[in-house]
Length: 246
Ligand SMILES: CC(C)(COP(=O)(O)OP(=O)(O)OC[C@H]1O[C@@H](n2cnc3c(N)ncnc32)[C@H](O)[C@@H]1OP(=O)(O)O)[C@@H](O)C(=O)NCCC(=O)NCCS
Image 1 (spheres, rainbow, N blue to C red):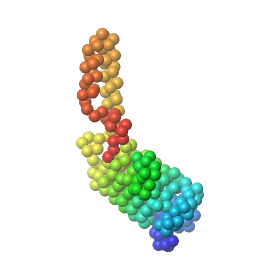
Image 2 (cartoon, rainbow, N blue to C red):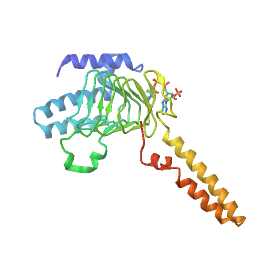
Image 3 (tube, protein in one colour):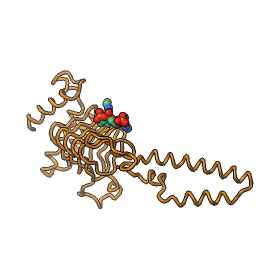
Image 4 (tube, rainbow, N blue to C red):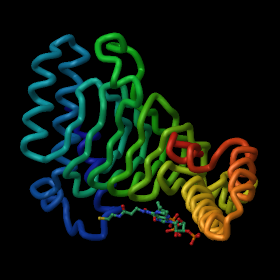
């Protein structure tokens, strides 16, 4: 265990967490700190080929802290997990330096998770650049890349690569800001949720017109309305349900 690693991790927590008062408090009372130290030990065992011992250390840390970090995960310097309960970090995750994540974050496998042993040993989990913040409850799924200086809003679900210097929000995650500028939602990053709601509202209005038309005895108008809906091409409701994102 390198003392420099412990020292700089404590310093990072004191610098970034206003609730942290002193070094002893961090050492005694911060499950995120305990989980990171345990991961260091587990990762060294993992890289030495003692995989079951490594998994066991990781498991004990999980029981004690509520934070599950696979020993195979590669984690950079000054990594902070705030609060921590419910955090899951998968085997092939790579995390850069100076990253900060909150409770309930999942850095997990995407579709690869459902393919079982076929994907064993393959990259299945995300890679986070340097200085990334992931808000509470956010999920980043799959072997995608989250760039440097990215902020992922709490509750977001990120399914696609994220460019450097971005803020990502929503389900599915989309870039709201890039390089400090608000992205033009209409042209570059459509909001699938808003589009789906808009289209459903249009359909309800269309159905209301059709009911009124039927009550008035005009069946021809009904088929015209339906044809108009089908002719509009890719349906935002389907796009949203299929998980469109960034
Ligand atoms: C998302 C986040 C990283 C961005 O921080 P920031 O760079 O200071 O930017 P802001 O807070 O101004 O948010 C930027 C935009 O994202 C929006 N946003 C923030 N959080 C959001 C969320 N969870 N879902 C959707 N949009 C969100 C804001 O409304 C704002 O939009 P606007 O510009 O249209 O007003 C920050 O809000 C954050 O750290 N969130 C996580 C906090 C957390 O997990 N706290 C748990 C503590 S226990």
